[in-house]
Image (cartoon, rainbow, N blue to C red; front, side):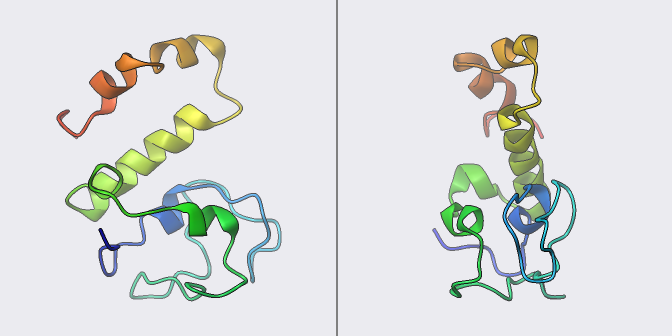
Length: 109
C-alpha cells in the first residue's frame, strides 16, 4: 500500500525525539512537523535528513484507515499506548487481545 496523497497524519500525530531540520529538539505528539508542506507532503521524503522514526512508518490498511481522521486517531492511539509515561494499569488494559477489541478496524471510530 502507498501513502494516501496529502494525508500527513503520521507527520502530526507522532512524537519525534530526534532532530528535524527546523525543529532541532524534535517534536511532541500532536504538533505539525515543520517539514510537512501545505499540501501535507513530507519535504524530507527520500532524503537523509528524514528522521528514522518517519522512515520506519509504512502505510497499511490498519494504520491508514479510510481517511486522514481514521489514520490520525489510530496513530494517536499507538502513540499513547507506547508512551513511556503510560502507567501499569493502562498497559494492562491495552495489552494482548484487549487492544484489538478496543481499537481494531472493526471498532467504530
